[in-house]
Length: 283
Image (spheres, rainbow, N blue to C red):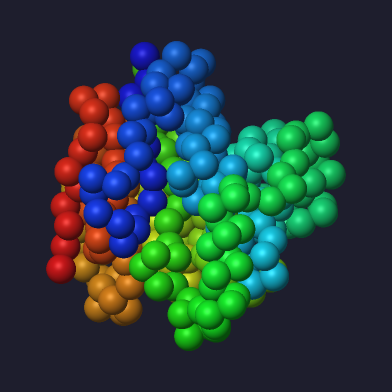
C-alpha cells in the first residue's frame, strides 16, 4: 500500500473551517505506484469545490480561470508541468505532458492540445464568481491586494510506494485577482514542487516567493544532505519568512517514510495515514 500525504493549501481561514482531506488521501492508496497515487489524490483534491484547484479555482482579474499543475517522478528523475489551462484535472494534463511529449512545460492552448478529451471548465463555482463580482465592485482587484491571505492556497500530495519510489504533485487555480498570463510555482520544478530518489516536496503559498527562492529544491537538498524532513521544512520556512513575511507551507516525505510539514499563516490542512497532521506553525 502507498504512503500518501496530502494538503489543501495554506490560508487565512481558521483550522475548524478547513475541509477534510481523508477522501483525497485514500484515493491513491491502492494505486499501482507513487506516481499513480499522487495523480489520483490530487485529482480528488481538484474535485473539491472548497479548494483552490480544479472545480473551485479562483478567478483572475478578468474573471477567468487559469490553472497550473506539476507532476514529479522522483524514481525516474522526470517532471512535467502545465500552466494557464482550463481543464478540470490539470494534474492529469501534466501526466499527459510527462508521458506523451518530450517537453517539460507546456502552457495554454499547446497544453490543451495534448489533453484532448480531458474535461474542460467553463468557469469556477458560483461562490467564486460572486466573490469576483464583489471584489470588482469594491476595487479589491487592485494589485496592491495581490497575495492577501484570503487569496492564497494550493493543493498537493507526496507519496512513497512499496518499491521505495517517491513522487510529488501540485495543482492550483493561482492567486485570486492575478494578472492574466501569470504563472505560479506549481508547474516549476524546484520552486513549488521537487522529487528525487530520496525525497518528495510540495509547497503552498504565493508562488512568486517560491519561484524567487526555489523553496522546494532547498528543502529537498537539505534532506538529501542528511537532514530529516521536518527540520528541513522548518529551516526553509524560516528562511522564506526572512525574505518576505507571506504565508507559506512545505510538505516533504523521504525514502524512509519520514514526513515533515511546516508553515507560516493562519491554518493549513495536511493529512496522512493516521489522519490530520498538526504541521509546525512558525512565527
